[in-house]
Length: 123
Image (cartoon, rainbow, N blue to C red; front, side, top):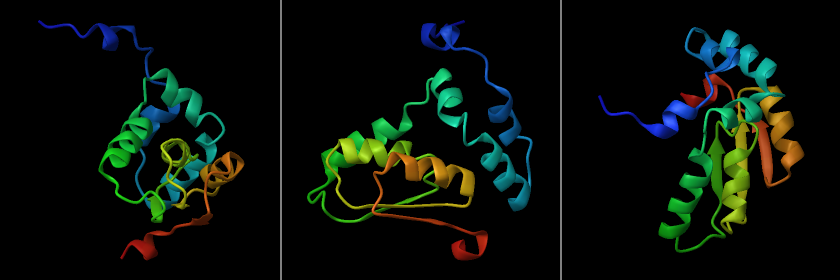
């Protein structure tokens, strides 16, 4: 058996993260994320969430023009937008179905525009 030392030091997942895998339906999922918005970053941080920074670095390496607009669909609290801004991207728009998550994202202030997305807009 091969052990991953980093995984062994992680704290167990919290209630909200566990609930995402048990929740179904658009309204229920939106309500879950609205309720989770205030503690989302602390919880995912405790579980080693590093995707926004990795994504932003990879995109920065491939991008020829960081002034081109980026749509961060499912922007949540704005972690990816902040990481993109830190990599030099200047025009970032965010959309998310959760008004609670969008409220946290707006506090971060790294978006040109932000708005609530609905399932109907995905079709």
